[in-house]
Image 1 (cartoon, rainbow, N blue to C red):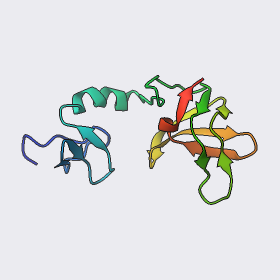
Image 2: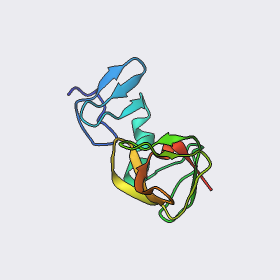
Image 3: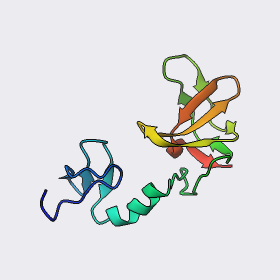
Image 4: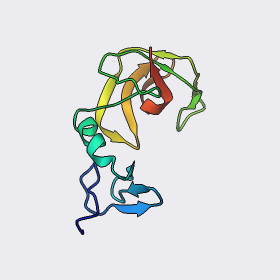
Amino acid sequence: MDSTTPQCPACGSEHAYPDGSLWVCPECGHEWAAGAEAAEAPAAEGGGVKDANGNPLADGDSVTVIKDLKVKGSSLVVKGGTKVKNIRLVADAVDGHDIACKIDGIGAMNLKSEFVRKA
């Protein structure tokens, strides 16, 4: 790693590479804009999970799903407008699914914060 290659703000990897105007981490798949690593690092450390509108989320919040979401591995669909109560933020999010919750009629599942808004 040379002095101009930034570390990944999500996992700290030294193997990031430029892709157009973004930097990409091959280890965790995180992408960020050049110069944004300093701004994103505090958010990643503090669990800065935000909804689709940029509002910060916390454990116990209620959110509303903003679009229809297919449930992987089944024929079920979480309809847009579904209200989800008492969410839990996941520290080690898998594939960006950083919200753990229970949805009536479906059960326990994980959601991506980009598909919900704070209720």
